[in-house]
Length: 147
Image 1 (spheres, rainbow, N blue to C red):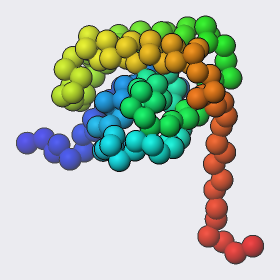
Image 2 (cartoon, helix red, strand yellow):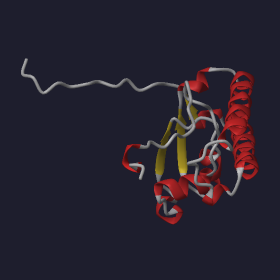
Image 3 (cartoon, rainbow, N blue to C red):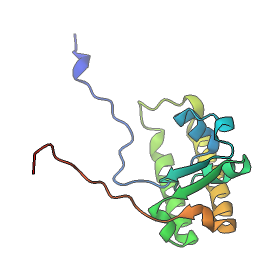
Image 4 (cartoon, rainbow, N blue to C red):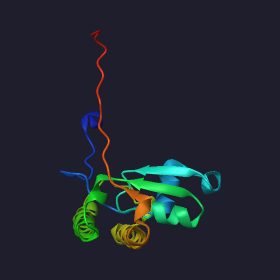
């Protein structure tokens, strides 16, 4: 009998952060957001990328500022990278045996969601650039040793 406790699951292997758009509904599900609780509030979307959350939230009366280093690039460069990243992930994701499709159903549906989110992002990014702040956070590690 084989000892399965030593087996590891292999997910999608990425060599860098990929730029994929996520929808308002995905954010709501991931972070257990209650949109009615956020109406009229200010929200900071850190690492917002090409998600449609900022645009869709504003349409619901939620004041979102998206923050990401990618916003320092021209919109066309962001588009090129996001399209390339989506294509790469789309080609690979169907071969990942441990991926749970649930909400996404299949690779084609996942791709359609990502394309929809990105399209909404680019329209909003162009129309309302003030909602998108470029920048990076620096991580600081603290030691328990006394100085």
